[in-house]
Length: 194
Image 1 (cartoon, helix red, strand yellow):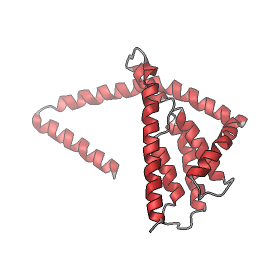
Image 2 (image 1 turned 180 degrees about the vertical axis):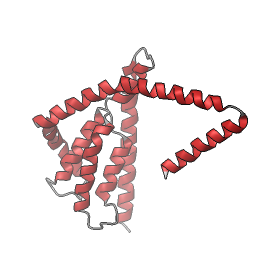
Image 3 (image 1 turned 120 degrees about the vertical axis):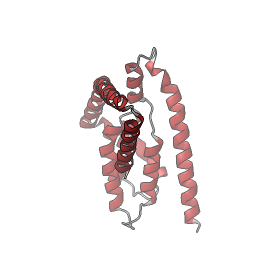
């Protein structure tokens, strides 16, 4: 659906530029944005590779599992419907840890696997379970301690201090997480009381 909307917006833009006589602007923007995309990729790729490599080393060495185990006592309170020691808790913890360093793309496989495991213990297969919804809220709030991608973009565009946004990002992620989980809790409690 989103691809259809974007496709329509592009076609409307091209059609409008054609009837307004600004078709050359479209060509210029296509070429300029292609060059910017390549520059952005070249700037961000090494940072993402570094963090993904560190996460792979942490995973292979068992460090990620140990940290995930430490997180499980907090997660057990957020996900009371998940049985003690269930594999999904470790996958959720791994997803959160990888997200904390700003690597959403590296966290995606953990998140998908966690959702698969949560679906296995879901009684209503055609409806998302409360644990699945809470996990989605947690992912959407973007628990990020080090916004790696944003720091890379700021460095690419010549920021004097690309890392100065860490404290602001931390405040934003705490507010979003607390608000999202609070709303999730209130809605879940309301639905239980029905």
